[in-house]
Image (cartoon, rainbow, N blue to C red; front, top):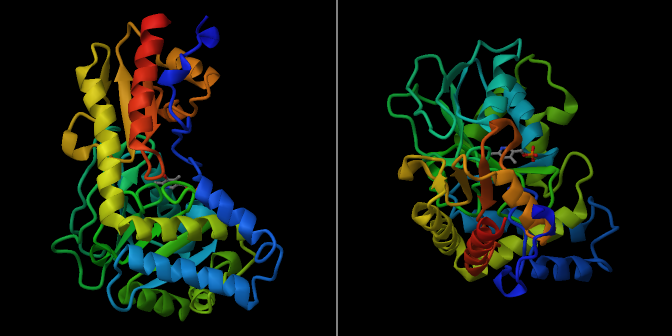
Length: 373
Ligand SMILES: *Cc1c(COP(=O)(O)O)cnc(C)c1O
């Protein structure tokens, strides 16, 4: 039985967490959490200690992304999913265009498409495992796509849409990309994410780098008579963020572990260091798959392959779910593919906290399971 297969301990990674989110938490973050246990934790989010922590997160992100003059870090409670509704209410003027090439891009597309006060969205799709490109379209005032489609392991460039209407905004879901993939945020107006992936913190918060144009758009829509639920009010989030606060109570431990990760990334060499490290880790998976007789990268076009989520298909002679089950029984967890994709596949996160050598160890463990199943 695969479940009783014991992988020799010298083959195992030092840390067995390869999930797409929540993902591996570094020990340093836990140390920071313990240290905060007698200071910040359990104190008011309206007082200086927590507000200073929020400020440190905001300033650390501006540094990490080398944000252009005038960009601001806005945050709120509810994770990226809450941000989709917040953006539908407070950021789309009349019509959005979405790239939909997996689960996450499709969900934001649905949010704006179904909003009764907006025109139907234009939704450009492509087969899972590939990506489409945005197309300049008159009347579209917001273009949206994920930089990394976590459900399939496809990455997309962050760049302005040539020929788009003057004043249209580029809004990028960087939930699984931010902090792990290179980006020039000047090519976007809103670069948003939640902290449970490369930032190795917990879920439940959204953060976004807003350009001056996006801030101005939010102000303008807030001044109209469009009804907006208080919890999803973008202007309220912007105003609170300017005071280093959130509208309602955030998880303080999430902020502590997020702040520690941002500090760590900046001290290691920032985004250039982080993106080189994830490129190294991902190449170890793709190169292993290319050399394997039974495995092959699911994303056919190497240009479209993600450096933070590697999806690997297996041929019919192998049951991928038996591999992930055997790995799990040995403490190597969360390599299962995205449920709804329904493929004979492993999905391996190579987020920045994961040691590249642990990725190599994982490929050796897979080989061991393949030989001994
Ligand atoms: C994980 C993920 C989300 C969902 O984030 P939540 O914080 O759970 O709402 C959205 N988009 C992408 C690209 C993701 O990877």
